[in-house]
Length: 181
Image 1: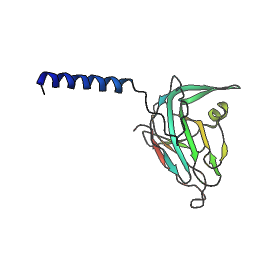
Image 2: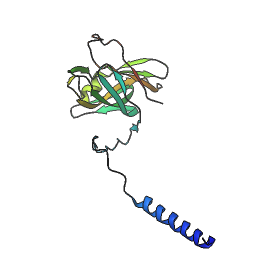
Image 3: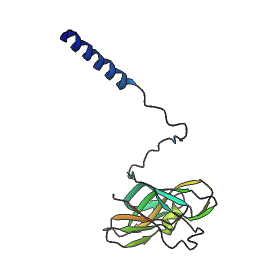
Image 4: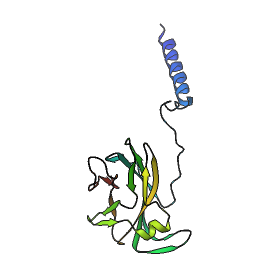
């Protein structure tokens, strides 16, 4: 074959292949997966892309983190932080075959100095976040967890609890989600 003709044929093939791949739409999602619509994060929220952690029959994904809030405002009250409010957006999924009692106010925030902080009851109530929720098989709950921590503290980890199971009826320990991977 003539070298000029071979070069022209090769260049034509490259142009055609490039044009096809650049304009092809993305493949459709698998027929075995859901495609939930994406949600826009709040303006002050850092979107987290973290893997799920599991405790018993419950899995957790931290979706977003907001720190440095000086107050919370709800439909019926506003409340000043003693230090700063930290908000963690959490997706909780029941993977067990029976109902799990999930305590949405039990997560613990661990700051970068290793200090533990319980959820802030006032902030949770003002923002009308759930308390205890029965999660049935494959039920998902997405909600916010609020903490009031010192101004100089930095959120580092979130300890979560999936609720009592047959193997851990008191639900004494829970895995930690690293908020700054």
